[in-house]
Amino acid sequence: MVIRWELQPNDVELAAYFYDRIEQQLEESYGIQYEFPKKEVVDHKKMINDVVQAIKAHNPTRGLAVVVDEISDFSSRKTKRKSQGMFSS
Image (cartoon, rainbow, N blue to C red; front, side, top):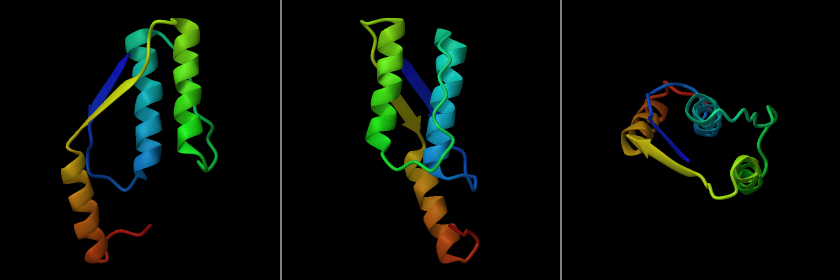
């Protein structure tokens, strides 16, 4: 299953944006409802493994591919904004 989107400049943490887009597109494109835990992420590898297992439970022949467009632009804007004091983390 392919999840793809273009990153837009915003003040949302990249991980939160990443997980939100996976949830949204799994439901819209594949009819799979999956919700990542809404607590602070400690183990990203486990979170990805959990969603892949949910996908495989729905269809054992499927996996997950995530394509993110404009990630270099997103990262450079964040770096510029942070160095200019316009972004707080």
